[in-house]
Image 1 (tube, rainbow, N blue to C red):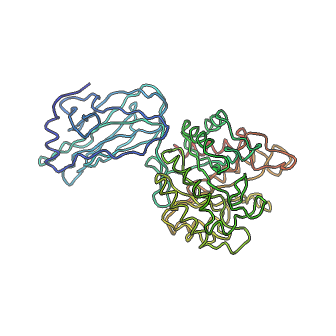
Image 2 (image 1 turned 90 degrees about the vertical axis):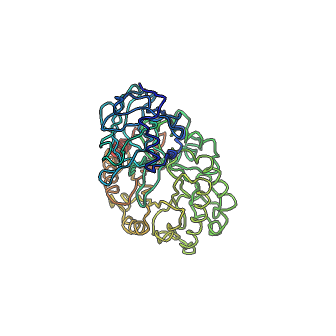
Image 3 (image 1 turned 120 degrees about the vertical axis):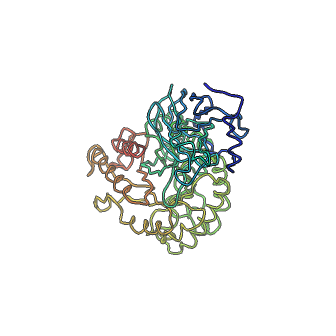
Length: 488
Protein backbone atom coordinates (compact mmCIF):
# COMPACT_ATOMS: atom_id res chain seq x y z
CA UNK A 1 0.00 0.00 0.00
CA UNK A 2 1.52 3.33 -1.06
CA UNK A 3 0.83 6.88 -0.06
CA UNK A 4 3.67 9.36 -0.33
CA UNK A 5 3.89 13.03 0.42
CA UNK A 6 5.96 13.89 -2.64
CA UNK A 7 5.28 13.86 -6.33
CA UNK A 8 6.45 10.79 -8.21
CA UNK A 9 9.86 11.55 -9.76
CA UNK A 10 8.85 15.17 -10.36
CA UNK A 11 6.00 13.92 -12.55
CA UNK A 12 3.86 17.04 -12.26
CA UNK A 13 6.68 19.25 -13.46
CA UNK A 14 7.41 16.96 -16.40
CA UNK A 15 3.75 16.89 -17.39
CA UNK A 16 3.68 20.68 -17.46
CA UNK A 17 6.95 20.77 -19.40
CA UNK A 18 5.55 18.47 -22.08
CA UNK A 19 2.42 20.63 -22.35
CA UNK A 20 0.06 17.89 -21.17
CA UNK A 21 -2.70 19.68 -19.30
CA UNK A 22 -4.10 18.17 -16.12
CA UNK A 23 -7.77 18.40 -17.02
CA UNK A 24 -10.79 17.39 -15.02
CA UNK A 25 -11.95 13.85 -15.62
CA UNK A 26 -14.71 13.37 -18.18
CA UNK A 27 -18.01 13.08 -16.35
CA UNK A 28 -19.83 9.79 -16.87
CA UNK A 29 -23.63 10.26 -16.96
CA UNK A 30 -25.32 9.95 -13.59
CA UNK A 31 -26.22 6.31 -12.99
CA UNK A 32 -29.70 6.89 -11.60
CA UNK A 33 -30.45 4.48 -8.78
CA UNK A 34 -27.93 1.86 -9.83
CA UNK A 35 -25.30 1.07 -7.21
CA UNK A 36 -21.83 2.42 -8.02
CA UNK A 37 -18.71 2.17 -5.88
CA UNK A 38 -15.56 4.21 -6.43
CA UNK A 39 -12.02 3.23 -5.41
CA UNK A 40 -8.82 5.27 -5.31
CA UNK A 41 -6.03 3.89 -7.50
CA UNK A 42 -3.23 5.32 -5.34
CA UNK A 43 -4.05 2.74 -2.67
CA UNK A 44 -2.85 -0.06 -4.97
CA UNK A 45 0.53 -1.73 -4.56
CA UNK A 46 3.40 -1.19 -6.99
CA UNK A 47 7.18 -1.60 -6.90
CA UNK A 48 8.45 1.94 -6.07
CA UNK A 49 11.03 1.57 -8.82
CA UNK A 50 8.19 1.61 -11.34
CA UNK A 51 5.47 3.78 -9.84
CA UNK A 52 4.11 5.71 -6.92
CA UNK A 53 1.23 7.77 -5.60
CA UNK A 54 1.58 11.49 -6.29
CA UNK A 55 -0.21 14.64 -5.32
CA UNK A 56 -2.43 16.23 -7.93
CA UNK A 57 -4.96 18.90 -6.93
CA UNK A 58 -7.20 17.94 -9.86
CA UNK A 59 -7.37 14.23 -9.00
CA UNK A 60 -9.97 12.76 -6.66
CA UNK A 61 -8.83 13.38 -3.09
CA UNK A 62 -5.82 15.25 -4.41
CA UNK A 63 -3.92 12.03 -5.22
CA UNK A 64 -3.43 9.72 -8.20
CA UNK A 65 -1.22 6.77 -9.11
CA UNK A 66 1.65 7.09 -11.61
CA UNK A 67 3.24 4.16 -13.44
CA UNK A 68 6.36 5.13 -15.38
CA UNK A 69 7.65 1.86 -16.72
CA UNK A 70 6.39 -1.42 -18.11
CA UNK A 71 4.88 -2.52 -14.81
CA UNK A 72 1.61 -3.20 -12.99
CA UNK A 73 -0.13 -1.87 -9.90
CA UNK A 74 -2.20 -4.49 -8.09
CA UNK A 75 -4.69 -4.67 -5.28
CA UNK A 76 -8.20 -5.69 -4.39
CA UNK A 77 -11.67 -4.33 -3.77
CA UNK A 78 -15.00 -5.53 -2.45
CA UNK A 79 -18.17 -5.05 -4.50
CA UNK A 80 -21.30 -4.78 -2.39
CA UNK A 81 -23.47 -5.99 -5.29
CA UNK A 82 -23.03 -7.74 -8.64
CA UNK A 83 -21.68 -5.35 -11.25
CA UNK A 84 -21.58 -5.14 -15.02
CA UNK A 85 -19.37 -2.10 -15.62
CA UNK A 86 -15.80 -1.17 -14.72
CA UNK A 87 -14.78 2.40 -15.52
CA UNK A 88 -11.35 3.96 -14.99
CA UNK A 89 -10.30 7.62 -14.85
CA UNK A 90 -6.87 7.80 -16.45
CA UNK A 91 -4.46 9.98 -18.43
CA UNK A 92 -0.84 9.75 -19.51
CA UNK A 93 2.25 11.30 -20.98
CA UNK A 94 2.34 10.96 -24.76
CA UNK A 95 5.87 10.60 -26.11
CA UNK A 96 7.36 10.29 -29.59
CA UNK A 97 5.77 9.46 -32.90
CA UNK A 98 5.83 5.65 -32.70
CA UNK A 99 3.68 3.98 -30.04
CA UNK A 100 3.37 7.49 -28.61
CA UNK A 101 0.32 7.13 -26.36
CA UNK A 102 0.65 5.09 -23.17
CA UNK A 103 -1.28 1.84 -23.32
CA UNK A 104 -3.17 0.52 -20.30
CA UNK A 105 -4.25 -3.05 -19.57
CA UNK A 106 -6.88 -3.70 -16.90
CA UNK A 107 -7.50 -7.13 -15.36
CA UNK A 108 -10.05 -8.31 -12.80
CA UNK A 109 -9.45 -11.58 -10.97
CA UNK A 110 -6.51 -12.29 -13.27
CA UNK A 111 -8.57 -11.99 -16.46
CA UNK A 112 -7.86 -9.12 -18.82
CA UNK A 113 -10.94 -6.89 -19.11
CA UNK A 114 -9.55 -4.53 -21.71
CA UNK A 115 -6.61 -2.69 -23.22
CA UNK A 116 -6.66 0.88 -24.47
CA UNK A 117 -4.45 3.76 -25.52
CA UNK A 118 -4.71 6.64 -23.04
CA UNK A 119 -4.85 10.31 -24.00
CA UNK A 120 -3.04 13.23 -22.43
CA UNK A 121 -6.19 14.53 -20.72
CA UNK A 122 -8.12 12.94 -17.89
CA UNK A 123 -10.78 10.73 -19.46
CA UNK A 124 -12.93 7.83 -18.35
CA UNK A 125 -12.50 4.42 -19.99
CA UNK A 126 -15.21 1.81 -19.58
CA UNK A 127 -15.57 -1.95 -20.00
CA UNK A 128 -18.51 -4.25 -19.44
CA UNK A 129 -18.87 -7.81 -18.21
CA UNK A 130 -20.60 -9.72 -15.45
CA UNK A 131 -19.06 -10.00 -11.98
CA UNK A 132 -20.43 -11.24 -8.67
CA UNK A 133 -20.63 -9.34 -5.41
CA UNK A 134 -17.71 -9.86 -3.05
CA UNK A 135 -13.92 -9.63 -3.13
CA UNK A 136 -12.00 -9.20 -6.39
CA UNK A 137 -8.42 -8.55 -7.40
CA UNK A 138 -7.55 -5.81 -9.89
CA UNK A 139 -4.45 -4.72 -11.76
CA UNK A 140 -3.47 -1.83 -14.02
CA UNK A 141 -0.49 -2.45 -16.30
CA UNK A 142 1.46 0.10 -18.33
CA UNK A 143 2.22 -1.85 -21.50
CA UNK A 144 4.76 0.22 -23.40
CA UNK A 145 8.11 1.75 -22.46
CA UNK A 146 8.85 4.80 -20.33
CA UNK A 147 10.20 6.99 -23.12
CA UNK A 148 12.60 7.35 -26.01
CA UNK A 149 15.34 9.42 -24.35
CA UNK A 150 13.88 12.76 -25.41
CA UNK A 151 10.54 12.64 -23.59
CA UNK A 152 8.68 10.69 -20.92
CA UNK A 153 5.81 8.31 -21.50
CA UNK A 154 3.84 7.36 -18.40
CA UNK A 155 0.42 6.18 -17.23
CA UNK A 156 -1.67 7.78 -14.50
CA UNK A 157 -4.78 6.34 -12.85
CA UNK A 158 -7.02 8.36 -10.55
CA UNK A 159 -10.08 6.27 -9.66
CA UNK A 160 -11.93 3.18 -10.80
CA UNK A 161 -15.61 2.45 -10.39
CA UNK A 162 -17.71 -0.68 -10.43
CA UNK A 163 -21.39 -0.31 -11.21
CA UNK A 164 -24.44 -2.25 -12.25
CA UNK A 165 -25.30 0.52 -14.69
CA UNK A 166 -24.03 1.17 -18.22
CA UNK A 167 -25.24 4.76 -18.49
CA UNK A 168 -27.68 6.18 -20.99
CA UNK A 169 -28.55 4.56 -24.30
CA UNK A 170 -27.07 6.78 -27.00
CA UNK A 171 -26.57 6.43 -30.72
CA UNK A 172 -23.72 6.74 -33.18
CA UNK A 173 -25.55 7.28 -36.45
CA UNK A 174 -27.81 4.29 -37.04
CA UNK A 175 -26.20 2.27 -34.22
CA UNK A 176 -27.55 2.37 -30.68
CA UNK A 177 -24.77 2.44 -28.08
CA UNK A 178 -24.65 1.42 -24.41
CA UNK A 179 -21.62 1.57 -22.19
CA UNK A 180 -19.41 2.50 -25.11
CA UNK A 181 -20.43 -0.58 -27.10
CA UNK A 182 -22.94 -1.21 -29.89
CA UNK A 183 -26.27 -2.09 -28.31
CA UNK A 184 -28.87 -4.40 -29.81
CA UNK A 185 -31.82 -5.71 -27.82
CA UNK A 186 -34.47 -8.41 -27.73
CA UNK A 187 -37.34 -6.99 -25.72
CA UNK A 188 -41.00 -7.13 -24.85
CA UNK A 189 -44.19 -5.10 -24.73
CA UNK A 190 -45.92 -4.92 -21.35
CA UNK A 191 -48.76 -2.55 -22.12
CA UNK A 192 -50.66 -3.25 -18.88
CA UNK A 193 -47.84 -2.32 -16.52
CA UNK A 194 -49.13 1.17 -15.74
CA UNK A 195 -52.81 0.22 -15.66
CA UNK A 196 -54.01 -0.35 -19.24
CA UNK A 197 -55.24 -3.88 -18.61
CA UNK A 198 -56.73 -6.23 -16.05
CA UNK A 199 -59.39 -3.83 -14.79
CA UNK A 200 -57.12 -0.77 -15.06
CA UNK A 201 -55.06 -1.97 -12.10
CA UNK A 202 -51.34 -1.14 -12.38
CA UNK A 203 -48.77 -3.77 -11.48
CA UNK A 204 -47.73 -3.90 -7.84
CA UNK A 205 -44.13 -3.45 -6.73
CA UNK A 206 -43.90 -7.19 -6.10
CA UNK A 207 -45.17 -7.94 -9.61
CA UNK A 208 -42.74 -5.44 -11.13
CA UNK A 209 -39.83 -6.96 -9.22
CA UNK A 210 -40.86 -10.47 -10.24
CA UNK A 211 -41.10 -9.44 -13.89
CA UNK A 212 -37.89 -7.43 -14.20
CA UNK A 213 -36.01 -9.98 -12.10
CA UNK A 214 -36.68 -12.71 -14.68
CA UNK A 215 -35.23 -10.81 -17.65
CA UNK A 216 -31.69 -10.81 -18.96
CA UNK A 217 -29.88 -7.55 -18.11
CA UNK A 218 -30.61 -4.55 -20.33
CA UNK A 219 -33.73 -5.99 -21.91
CA UNK A 220 -35.98 -3.20 -23.22
CA UNK A 221 -39.59 -3.31 -22.05
CA UNK A 222 -41.98 -1.02 -23.90
CA UNK A 223 -44.95 0.22 -21.88
CA UNK A 224 -47.43 3.06 -21.72
CA UNK A 225 -46.84 6.33 -19.87
CA UNK A 226 -50.22 7.92 -20.59
CA UNK A 227 -51.48 10.95 -18.67
CA UNK A 228 -54.56 9.29 -17.08
CA UNK A 229 -52.28 6.98 -15.05
CA UNK A 230 -50.25 9.82 -13.51
CA UNK A 231 -46.63 10.05 -12.41
CA UNK A 232 -46.58 7.86 -9.24
CA UNK A 233 -47.00 4.61 -11.18
CA UNK A 234 -44.16 5.64 -13.50
CA UNK A 235 -42.00 6.30 -10.44
CA UNK A 236 -42.54 2.70 -9.38
CA UNK A 237 -41.93 1.26 -12.85
CA UNK A 238 -38.67 3.14 -13.38
CA UNK A 239 -37.45 2.37 -9.86
CA UNK A 240 -38.13 -1.35 -10.33
CA UNK A 241 -36.35 -1.38 -13.67
CA UNK A 242 -33.35 0.33 -12.07
CA UNK A 243 -33.25 -2.20 -9.24
CA UNK A 244 -32.88 -5.01 -11.76
CA UNK A 245 -30.60 -3.43 -14.37
CA UNK A 246 -33.39 -3.17 -16.95
CA UNK A 247 -34.47 -0.61 -19.57
CA UNK A 248 -37.95 0.75 -20.25
CA UNK A 249 -39.21 2.55 -23.34
CA UNK A 250 -42.02 4.85 -22.21
CA UNK A 251 -44.72 5.83 -24.72
CA UNK A 252 -46.22 9.23 -23.92
CA UNK A 253 -49.53 9.07 -25.85
CA UNK A 254 -51.62 6.75 -28.02
CA UNK A 255 -52.50 7.57 -31.60
CA UNK A 256 -55.30 5.00 -31.34
CA UNK A 257 -56.79 6.59 -28.15
CA UNK A 258 -56.92 3.38 -26.13
CA UNK A 259 -56.50 2.94 -22.38
CA UNK A 260 -58.19 6.18 -21.43
CA UNK A 261 -55.71 8.31 -23.38
CA UNK A 262 -58.44 10.30 -25.13
CA UNK A 263 -56.72 13.64 -25.69
CA UNK A 264 -57.62 14.57 -29.27
CA UNK A 265 -59.84 11.52 -29.74
CA UNK A 266 -62.00 11.67 -32.87
CA UNK A 267 -65.49 10.93 -31.57
CA UNK A 268 -66.10 8.62 -28.64
CA UNK A 269 -64.80 5.31 -29.94
CA UNK A 270 -61.40 4.04 -28.86
CA UNK A 271 -59.30 2.81 -31.77
CA UNK A 272 -59.97 5.80 -34.01
CA UNK A 273 -57.31 8.30 -35.09
CA UNK A 274 -56.56 11.39 -33.09
CA UNK A 275 -58.07 14.39 -34.85
CA UNK A 276 -56.15 16.21 -37.54
CA UNK A 277 -56.52 19.38 -35.46
CA UNK A 278 -54.71 17.69 -32.59
CA UNK A 279 -51.64 17.04 -34.75
CA UNK A 280 -51.85 20.58 -36.16
CA UNK A 281 -51.49 22.20 -32.75
CA UNK A 282 -54.07 20.75 -30.38
CA UNK A 283 -51.37 18.60 -28.80
CA UNK A 284 -49.91 21.73 -27.18
CA UNK A 285 -52.80 22.00 -24.69
CA UNK A 286 -52.49 18.74 -22.73
CA UNK A 287 -49.99 16.42 -24.38
CA UNK A 288 -46.98 18.72 -24.41
CA UNK A 289 -47.21 19.73 -20.72
CA UNK A 290 -47.63 16.06 -19.78
CA UNK A 291 -44.73 14.91 -21.93
CA UNK A 292 -42.35 17.55 -20.60
CA UNK A 293 -43.34 16.82 -16.99
CA UNK A 294 -42.60 13.12 -17.46
CA UNK A 295 -39.26 13.53 -19.20
CA UNK A 296 -38.14 16.21 -16.73
CA UNK A 297 -38.92 13.89 -13.84
CA UNK A 298 -36.85 11.02 -15.25
CA UNK A 299 -34.13 12.90 -17.12
CA UNK A 300 -31.41 11.35 -14.92
CA UNK A 301 -32.85 7.81 -14.91
CA UNK A 302 -30.66 5.55 -17.01
CA UNK A 303 -33.29 2.81 -16.73
CA UNK A 304 -35.29 4.79 -19.30
CA UNK A 305 -34.05 3.58 -22.67
CA UNK A 306 -35.72 6.37 -24.68
CA UNK A 307 -38.95 8.31 -24.94
CA UNK A 308 -41.54 7.36 -27.54
CA UNK A 309 -43.61 10.37 -28.57
CA UNK A 310 -46.81 8.49 -29.43
CA UNK A 311 -47.98 5.01 -30.32
CA UNK A 312 -48.93 4.66 -34.01
CA UNK A 313 -49.33 8.30 -35.14
CA UNK A 314 -51.18 9.25 -38.31
CA UNK A 315 -54.18 7.55 -39.88
CA UNK A 316 -55.13 4.18 -41.30
CA UNK A 317 -57.61 5.65 -43.78
CA UNK A 318 -57.49 9.45 -44.16
CA UNK A 319 -55.05 11.02 -46.68
CA UNK A 320 -55.58 14.43 -45.04
CA UNK A 321 -53.01 13.26 -42.48
CA UNK A 322 -49.99 14.28 -44.54
CA UNK A 323 -46.34 13.59 -43.86
CA UNK A 324 -45.76 17.33 -43.45
CA UNK A 325 -48.33 17.55 -40.65
CA UNK A 326 -46.99 14.54 -38.75
CA UNK A 327 -43.38 15.66 -39.25
CA UNK A 328 -44.18 19.08 -37.80
CA UNK A 329 -45.69 17.37 -34.74
CA UNK A 330 -42.64 15.09 -34.38
CA UNK A 331 -40.24 18.01 -34.66
CA UNK A 332 -41.98 20.26 -32.14
CA UNK A 333 -42.66 17.49 -29.62
CA UNK A 334 -39.14 16.05 -29.91
CA UNK A 335 -37.59 19.50 -29.49
CA UNK A 336 -39.62 20.06 -26.32
CA UNK A 337 -38.62 16.65 -24.96
CA UNK A 338 -34.93 17.22 -25.70
CA UNK A 339 -35.07 20.69 -24.12
CA UNK A 340 -36.46 19.19 -20.90
CA UNK A 341 -34.26 16.08 -21.04
CA UNK A 342 -31.08 16.18 -23.12
CA UNK A 343 -29.94 12.77 -21.83
CA UNK A 344 -32.36 10.44 -23.61
CA UNK A 345 -33.08 9.53 -27.20
CA UNK A 346 -36.48 10.17 -28.80
CA UNK A 347 -38.43 7.60 -30.83
CA UNK A 348 -41.55 8.41 -32.82
CA UNK A 349 -43.66 5.25 -32.35
CA UNK A 350 -44.47 4.90 -36.06
CA UNK A 351 -46.31 1.82 -37.33
CA UNK A 352 -44.99 1.52 -40.91
CA UNK A 353 -44.71 3.49 -44.14
CA UNK A 354 -48.07 2.36 -45.54
CA UNK A 355 -49.81 4.70 -43.11
CA UNK A 356 -51.10 8.20 -43.81
CA UNK A 357 -48.75 10.74 -42.26
CA UNK A 358 -45.65 8.53 -42.21
CA UNK A 359 -45.32 7.39 -45.83
CA UNK A 360 -41.76 8.74 -46.21
CA UNK A 361 -39.74 7.52 -43.24
CA UNK A 362 -36.66 9.52 -44.21
CA UNK A 363 -38.61 12.76 -44.37
CA UNK A 364 -40.71 12.43 -41.22
CA UNK A 365 -37.70 11.26 -39.17
CA UNK A 366 -35.23 13.81 -40.52
CA UNK A 367 -35.71 16.36 -37.73
CA UNK A 368 -32.64 17.08 -35.58
CA UNK A 369 -34.26 15.95 -32.32
CA UNK A 370 -35.74 12.68 -33.65
CA UNK A 371 -33.55 9.60 -33.16
CA UNK A 372 -35.44 6.34 -33.73
CA UNK A 373 -38.18 5.03 -36.04
CA UNK A 374 -40.24 1.89 -35.55
CA UNK A 375 -42.30 -0.70 -37.39
CA UNK A 376 -45.21 -2.66 -35.91
CA UNK A 377 -46.00 -5.97 -37.57
CA UNK A 378 -48.14 -9.08 -36.98
CA UNK A 379 -47.80 -10.62 -40.42
CA UNK A 380 -47.18 -14.21 -39.37
CA UNK A 381 -50.93 -14.68 -38.90
CA UNK A 382 -52.02 -12.38 -41.74
CA UNK A 383 -53.70 -14.71 -44.23
CA UNK A 384 -51.71 -17.53 -42.57
CA UNK A 385 -48.61 -16.25 -44.34
CA UNK A 386 -46.16 -17.49 -41.66
CA UNK A 387 -44.01 -14.43 -42.49
CA UNK A 388 -40.92 -14.10 -40.33
CA UNK A 389 -39.85 -10.66 -41.61
CA UNK A 390 -42.40 -8.06 -42.66
CA UNK A 391 -42.35 -6.76 -46.21
CA UNK A 392 -42.38 -3.25 -44.73
CA UNK A 393 -38.85 -3.72 -43.41
CA UNK A 394 -36.84 -3.25 -46.61
CA UNK A 395 -38.28 0.13 -47.68
CA UNK A 396 -38.35 1.53 -44.14
CA UNK A 397 -34.81 0.39 -43.41
CA UNK A 398 -33.50 1.88 -46.65
CA UNK A 399 -35.08 5.22 -45.76
CA UNK A 400 -33.61 5.22 -42.25
CA UNK A 401 -30.17 4.23 -43.49
CA UNK A 402 -30.28 7.16 -45.90
CA UNK A 403 -30.49 9.54 -42.92
CA UNK A 404 -28.26 7.52 -40.60
CA UNK A 405 -30.79 6.70 -37.88
CA UNK A 406 -31.80 3.37 -36.30
CA UNK A 407 -34.98 1.39 -36.84
CA UNK A 408 -36.59 -0.84 -34.24
CA UNK A 409 -39.37 -3.39 -34.53
CA UNK A 410 -41.54 -1.82 -31.85
CA UNK A 411 -44.20 -4.53 -31.97
CA UNK A 412 -44.13 -8.05 -33.39
CA UNK A 413 -46.11 -11.10 -32.41
CA UNK A 414 -48.26 -14.05 -33.31
CA UNK A 415 -51.29 -15.78 -31.91
CA UNK A 416 -51.03 -19.05 -30.01
CA UNK A 417 -52.46 -21.18 -27.24
CA UNK A 418 -51.68 -24.52 -25.66
CA UNK A 419 -54.31 -26.13 -27.90
CA UNK A 420 -57.05 -25.25 -30.36
CA UNK A 421 -55.01 -22.75 -32.42
CA UNK A 422 -52.94 -23.15 -35.55
CA UNK A 423 -49.81 -22.34 -33.50
CA UNK A 424 -48.98 -23.94 -30.15
CA UNK A 425 -47.08 -22.11 -27.41
CA UNK A 426 -43.97 -24.18 -28.08
CA UNK A 427 -44.18 -23.51 -31.81
CA UNK A 428 -44.62 -19.80 -31.13
CA UNK A 429 -41.44 -19.77 -29.04
CA UNK A 430 -39.58 -21.22 -32.00
CA UNK A 431 -41.04 -18.61 -34.35
CA UNK A 432 -40.08 -15.81 -31.94
CA UNK A 433 -36.49 -17.06 -31.98
CA UNK A 434 -36.53 -17.07 -35.78
CA UNK A 435 -37.98 -13.56 -35.87
CA UNK A 436 -35.40 -12.19 -33.44
CA UNK A 437 -32.53 -13.78 -35.34
CA UNK A 438 -33.83 -12.65 -38.72
CA UNK A 439 -34.54 -9.03 -37.80
CA UNK A 440 -31.36 -8.51 -35.83
CA UNK A 441 -29.27 -9.82 -38.72
CA UNK A 442 -30.13 -6.63 -40.62
CA UNK A 443 -27.68 -3.76 -40.26
CA UNK A 444 -29.61 -0.79 -38.93
CA UNK A 445 -32.23 -2.80 -37.00
CA UNK A 446 -31.46 -1.94 -33.38
CA UNK A 447 -33.91 -4.22 -31.61
CA UNK A 448 -37.24 -6.04 -31.45
CA UNK A 449 -40.06 -5.76 -28.89
CA UNK A 450 -42.25 -8.87 -28.90
CA UNK A 451 -45.94 -8.50 -27.97
CA UNK A 452 -46.76 -9.02 -25.16
CA UNK A 453 -46.59 -10.03 -21.52
CA UNK A 454 -49.55 -10.05 -19.12
CA UNK A 455 -50.00 -11.25 -15.54
CA UNK A 456 -53.02 -13.50 -16.13
CA UNK A 457 -54.09 -16.31 -18.44
CA UNK A 458 -54.96 -14.38 -21.63
CA UNK A 459 -56.98 -17.18 -23.23
CA UNK A 460 -60.70 -16.39 -23.21
CA UNK A 461 -63.83 -17.09 -25.21
CA UNK A 462 -63.41 -13.70 -26.87
CA UNK A 463 -59.71 -14.29 -27.57
CA UNK A 464 -59.00 -18.03 -27.76
CA UNK A 465 -55.67 -17.54 -29.57
CA UNK A 466 -54.12 -14.45 -27.96
CA UNK A 467 -50.94 -12.62 -28.84
CA UNK A 468 -50.16 -12.19 -25.15
CA UNK A 469 -48.72 -14.64 -22.69
CA UNK A 470 -47.64 -14.91 -19.08
CA UNK A 471 -43.94 -15.00 -18.22
CA UNK A 472 -44.21 -18.79 -18.02
CA UNK A 473 -44.98 -18.80 -21.76
CA UNK A 474 -42.03 -20.39 -23.58
CA UNK A 475 -41.74 -17.43 -25.99
CA UNK A 476 -40.28 -15.38 -23.14
CA UNK A 477 -37.54 -17.94 -22.66
CA UNK A 478 -36.67 -17.30 -26.32
CA UNK A 479 -36.39 -13.58 -25.61
CA UNK A 480 -34.26 -14.13 -22.49
CA UNK A 481 -31.94 -16.44 -24.39
CA UNK A 482 -31.48 -13.96 -27.23
CA UNK A 483 -30.80 -11.00 -24.92
CA UNK A 484 -28.36 -13.11 -22.91
CA UNK A 485 -26.49 -13.91 -26.12
CA UNK A 486 -26.51 -10.23 -27.13
CA UNK A 487 -25.06 -9.28 -23.73
CA UNK A 488 -22.11 -11.64 -24.11
